[in-house]
View 1 (tube, rainbow, N blue to C red):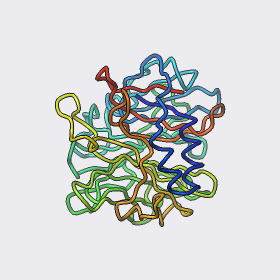
View 2: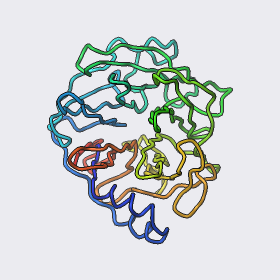
View 3: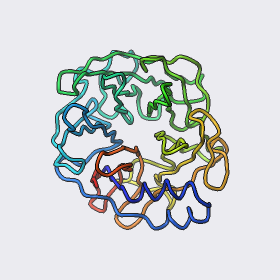
Amino acid sequence: MTRLIKRAIKMLFKTLAAHAALFAALVHGYANPGSCSGACNVHDPSLIRRASDGKYFRFSTGNKISYMSASSIAGPWTTIGSMLPGGSSIDLAGKDDLWVNTPAPDAQLVNGVYHVYFSVSTFGSQNSAIGLATSPTMESGSWTDKGATGISSSSSKAYNAIDANLINADGTYYMNFGSFWHDIYQAPMDSGATKAAASSYNLAYQPSGSHAVEGAYMYKYGSYYYLFFSSGICCGYDTSRPASGEEYKIKVCRSTSPSSGFADASGTGCTNGGGTTVLESHGTVYGPGGQGVFTDPTYGPVLYYHYKASSHKWKTPSL
């Protein structure tokens, strides 16, 4: 589920600015997830609040980009349906499916219009592309498929063009993306955040093992940009679980620049296997990941994510 944890995220930001030893002491005292009511069983959530009336919307992987709404960040969440019921206009395998082939949608407000970035791909394939749908209201039936953003991948590329995340860095838009292969990349976007404006470059890389890093989410707090990402094995927990410690967990690096120089609390570069663990399996929470950070008008910075609960369902509670 999507776990929204105000106190944990505030403590995290304070600790990242402090000594590494203090950081290590904090992250092992994990806060429990907040509550969630209504439709809370989702994977790879993305959270946004409508400016006009304060209604919350949550987008997630599956059902041709499933989305829900609620009057409160904690719910009750009500299912709206599919964002793109007709599938995507991007001509790749998975475009008419989008049930399991829309990794980690990302919802943002850009120039007064709501953007949701999504990926067209099939599981484990590098033949992928990042697309865009827009809406003035986020109401059902209001979405327009804008097609490809110009960020795509094939076997000739060092990355996989899925798990998109947009950040507005003082008026300049950047798209973070990537999953396995050479992990997390970034591409500058045009002023409308609709198309890539320049070539992409690497932000995070785990050189060992299977390079199990994906799901980037960048968030600015104070003078630093924090690059959160999911590390480890994400899926298939119902039938087979990886060795202890190899399942999904949330890690972070930070930099004063949105486009380079990311390092963890110990100073290890994020392109050299760096990443300080923010949240990992504990108690009834197994394999947390697919995270984002949302600035709530009441609670401030909120960390949200999915995880596998002891009930064997993907859960999305809130604060």
